[in-house]
Image (cartoon, rainbow, N blue to C red; front, side):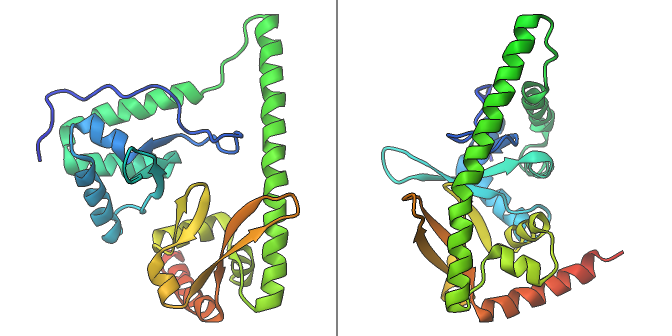
Length: 245
């Protein structure tokens, strides 16, 4: 695999915010990693998938990037786990660029670090920014509530169970259970929603239902079938035994 003699400088423009500010976790895409090490993006994707198959890293969430032709698929490393996994990927591809990747993450962290205001004007601006962020977070909650209500009604009417219902059934923390489903390649992130891999739909373990709230907000909900609940309960039990001290 060919690599350039020096890492390409990545854009410093933050890309970890969505349109209404519901997320703030630092991210780096597989395409950015490819640019950093001077490698083909498809080679980076293959390396990520192979390491994930060997359980060396967690398979990152995926996102679509619009292009002139077919949308391009990229993996997105996020947060501390993503930082760790991306370093492993680069160490596998081009060890000489590992330091450059660490520098890049440190630059992102510096952008995220809170700045202490030095003047009254800066303090007032910071207070205004924080108030605006709170409003955006409240807007995110308002958008999510109709979806949760729809899922609850649908579960009652069909016997299918949503993510929260299954997590509660298994006495699992939602964040841990979501990370587990992602690690087991049950779900992945696509356009802001968690969707299942096609193999699990084909196997009858999950079903994707489209709903629309009274406010017109449309969304997709991943639901577990009774067969899927039994299947994932077995995997979760085995996982709990593995991580038990």
